[in-house]
Amino acid sequence: MARHIELKTPAQMATMHQAGLILHKGLDAVVAAAQPGVTTNELDQVFRSVLAEHGATSNFLGYHGFPATICASVNDEVVHGIPGDRVLNDGDIISVDAGAVIDGWHSDSARTVLVGDVDPADQRLSEITEAAMWAGIAAYAKAKHVGEIGNAIEDYVRAQQGEPLGILEDYVGHGIGSAMHQAPDVFNYRSGMRGPRVKAGMVLAIEPMLVRGSIETRTLADDWTVVTVDGSNASQWEHSVARHKEGIWVITAPDGGAAGLAPFGVVPVPIPQK
Image (cartoon, rainbow, N blue to C red; front, side, top):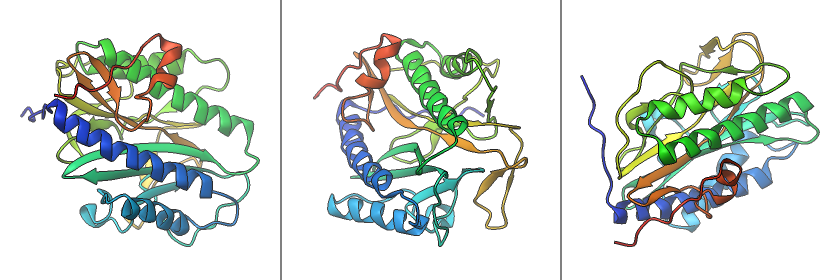
């Protein structure tokens, strides 16, 4: 059965952008705090304080019982890592996924943070994952169907020289708006399906997850943390992106995504004020 895709008005997208800017500040603070010797719970507290300071709420805290405001996934933890007493060490990589809500409208974004002196292969993993996200966002700017986003992401990853990277298939992007997870699913690979037609008012969370080894994963006993079966490290990058009548705008980036999209020849267009 087809799921309803929520189309937002410019005013609603503008509110989502407000939430996205607060989320961006929160992630900036977490990235700055992610140093050797810091626990993942301390990172969660940093993010909570930014939300409180700006009058936003978390869409992660309490979601199906999730106990924190960020997902903190370290090394072979792919996604949904629960913050706790784990201490970050020099050479770790950590994917931080978080969201913020203003007036009932959601934002969602993730970054991979390099802690101290990391393996160059892990740095490459993060860089390719981030660039693949931007390739998908650039495709969204002109796409007629949602499936074109996954095509662009996979094409970018497969075109890279050196160690081949795996694209996770069990975890995908999604629509976002009056709820954090909405239709449609946004695949990060060539699924062979066109997907729904892209329309003005759609806001999508585009979030590729790449690994240095096999894409096979398992979920730990906490029923949340997903790890690679072979122990290979993983990276996640994510932005929430609005498609309106005039173009696209990355609602979780202060510049609307201008810097990230520039290499792809795409110029974001601000959300109309009415």
